[in-house]
Length: 363
Image (tube, rainbow, N blue to C red; front, side, top):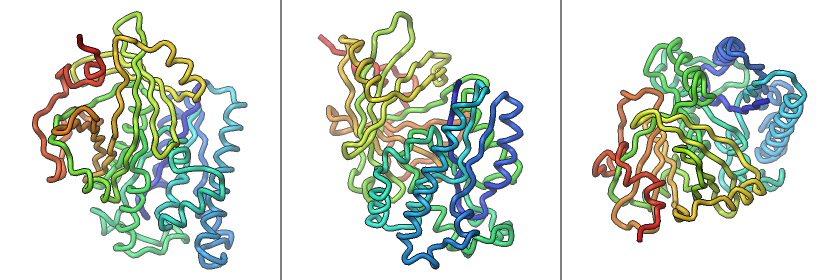
């Protein structure tokens, strides 16, 4: 049984309700049992539990976060009892959406109330797909008429959309679907992104990599739509040409663990199979480390910019350069870099800049 849990989020009037129907139709046809976790805020507000009826906003947020986590646990428990070989749990908004409605101190208090941390909560989802509000690029279609819980003006909706993107930035698989096309094509792009993540028909990864000048760390860390991640990557022994690695990923002492197997298809396209590990599984697999390669330790800055998701890797052995990567759903997609990022050259097909090469111990 394969159980995948994803989030479909977005600003007000982004198309989430319609997206759920598209997801149901598309993935049922592909053999998935599709389960939907309803939007918690809409349920609570519709039932009279709101930020303005509770004692304070933080009182309300604690209620919403607790219910969100419990609902997802129930859906995961139910999924494990089902007969389907492939089960897709779709969350109509996820736990990190709450972050957009609180300041940092309030958010920390809410996390404490459920005994969790940001890394554990954010990365409990396998992928996150953000639909941009109609208030950014499709203002003529923005309305509050189809959702009684929606009260934002166009300006407020656009600002909230930015906060939601910032809240989810840092997730290992975060995609933003904008309004650069008509609405039907927006839905098709969402389905294509989810299909690519699920490996339908094959788990291809289209990635471009650039050597850049050492970035302005102060600028990155001050950006609301940028998140610092600490990574330790260890390569394992392989009997064939597969690249097998395990990774510890997180921040501030809170980590999650993955195993990744990559098979090369072309210079910029690879089949990638990834699975989440428990800490015990991770430690066990470390015993099979390839001793001809060193561990790669790096600080990653996940940056959302113009609806693109960059991963900027800063290594301790370089003080004049770094690596910027971006995953694409289309090999020909245009890439727009922030003016603060100075590209030296593209190194997508340059073996010497791959992590596997950087990990090699040279005599």
